[in-house]
Length: 509
Ligand code: SF4
Image 1: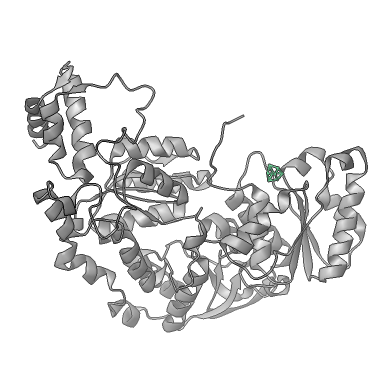
Image 2: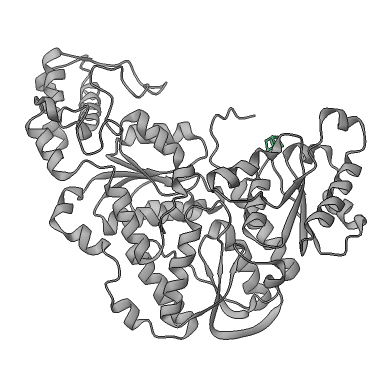
């Protein structure tokens, strides 16, 4: 048992739903208790799809458990095949149905449908949503992928699904880049593909993997079965996009020089321009799925000039990549799906900006730290109406705007430091952001509860507290923390103005 309030990923059958909903002509028959249809809302409300996902639930109830739930499944499967007339069906069990062990795969086989049925074995108690999506895509390819013409300079784009963070616009952006390189896209999958399309996946010479969490396993399989190599670089940020272009050009045998010669993103100039000087060295904490977190850390350091003070992911399957990236930054990766552990790590690192998921948005709000979303899980506002890729050159423009926006503008930062007594520039309503991103007022109770193991709080003399308040609020937390650890190390019980300045001198050495 694990006490869980928030979870970064849903159960694996939600991953299977994301594949089925992204595709066309595929139906999912899910053995699940009444109530599991809540997952439809992810697609109809968060992603704002205009139709129900192609999922039939058996929705068994307590009274069905005394009867024949297997017959219920077979009936639901036959009804779905007749009503929706899909090209193929995937069948599986949700967490509760897994416990009653009706074996949807075996039942589907004996139902004798005249369309392909792909059984899914998704262990709900050990695996999660992304794993479920990856496994479903892999099983579909195992069933349908066939050898093809392997036409030169032709690729498939693998990984985008329904409910993917910016998948819709990433695909447009990357397809645009590929076409400018002279590379033909044979197939995009799972998103938009039909089961029959998967049979011609072998017509491409190589695969572009946009989201390794979802398509990594499939791409490795296609390499084994069809000999198709696949891309490793993730086109997020200008550096990532340039690496990606070079990698694709090498796989396709085309010349990338003209495309690489273009300064196709505004990010490099924007972050070099003098207005961005105040961004240099801003302390940033990064958390998300492995792909987005690792890419964001690179952009943060190399393209924005931030200092990355924390890097982590909830993607246990990709923990190795995150650990390597963290090591290169001189950090130890935080691999956890416990949002409280993430909250504690953020509170300890005292960053000036958090790049994370919807969860970190809540956490950062509580701690009074600006935050931008870089990865799923996300809420409805991160399925925007406007074009908002994360990938490619336009994606880099989007990243620049999205990450800088929550920060205090340079001039405001300067003015607040100088005129902190002024009513208009108080710490609590400091900026173009209005009240939303303002930290808790100084008179409010401390925003972050002290970790359970923390020693008793030190006393701050009134003058020392007043002096501390002169420090701009976005670095005040760090100053407080440094001073307290300095005092503790010296066995002091009260912090005076002198302690504050001694600590400052100590840490600036
Ligand atoms: S079967 Fe799984 S997903 Fe459905 S309600 Fe139970 S725990 Fe949640």
